[in-house]
Image (cartoon, rainbow, N blue to C red; front, side, top):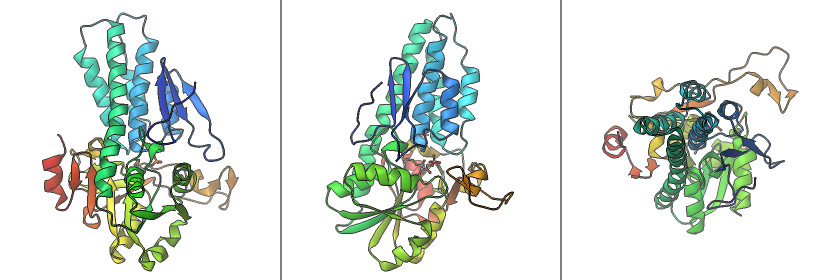
Length: 349
Ligand code: MRU
C-alpha cells in the first residue's frame, strides 16, 4: 500500500484495511522499504528487531498489533488476546509508551465486554487510531512550547532520533527543532551519530534533510569540543521513560551529553508526551534498561570490527539525573525544577 505524508515528509506507521505498514528503519537512508503486517506476532518481532523504534512509535505499533490480533479472531464469538498482549509487552523493555498503549487497549477491551466481536474490533481500532492521532497533535503542541524557550540565532544539538520516525509524526525533540527552525530561531542543528544503531546518522540526518533543515552530523566524541565553542545553546532530546522525580531514560549517550552541557553552560531540554512518564517509578535507578546483543558493537553492518570473541557491553539506554535537566516539555506545558512537585501537579495519574 502507499503511505501518506503527515505534517512533514516522513511517515513511519500507517494502518489501512487491517494492514499495518511500517517503514523499515533498519534500511534507511539507503533504501525506503515499507513492510506490510497482518499478524501481531510479526509486529512484536518488528519492534524487537528495530524495524520500528522510538518510544511513541513503539506504543502506536503495539496498539495496531492488538487490532490485528483481534481482527484475526473476527469469526470467533469471544476474543482471546492475552498471549498477544504478553508477546507485545515483551518486545522491548524500556520505553514505557509501549506499556501505556497496551494498557489503553486493555481498558478499551474491558469497557466493551458485552458487545459483539466485530464491535470490539471497531472499538480497538478506534482506540489505536486515537493513540496515533493524539500523538501527532501532542508533538505539535510540544513543538511550539519547546521552541518558545529557544533564543534567535541559536545552534542546537540532538541525539538519536526523536523525530517523525520515532513517533506518530512530527517528532518530540525534532518537533521542537522543526518549530524553532520555522520561527527562524535555529540556524544549525547538530545530530550526534548515536552508536551503535546510528539513529542520528541514518535517521535524524535523513529526516531533517528531507525537510531542508540545516543538519550537520557529528561523531559522539566531538560533542565536548562542539559545546566548548559556545554556539550551541540547547541540547534537545526525547525520552523513553521519565521517573516521578524527573530522571530521564533515553538513548545511551544522553547522560554523557547532559554532563557535558552542564560543564559548558549549555541548556538541556527533554521533550516527551505524558505517556512517557512513569509515576510508579520514583527515580531513574528503577527504570529497566534494555541490554542488546554484543554483536551490535563487535560488528558493523554484518562485518566484524572487534577481535573474535571480544567481550562487549551494550546497554541501549542510560539515565540522566533530573539535576542536569533545565526543562521537560510535555503537551501539558513546560516543566521546570523542582521536577518532583511539578510532575505530580501536571502529569495525569
Ligand atoms: O532504540 P531506539 O531507537 O528505540 O531509541 C529511541 C530513543 O532513545 C529516543 O530518543 C526516544 O525513544 C524518544 S523518541 C520520540
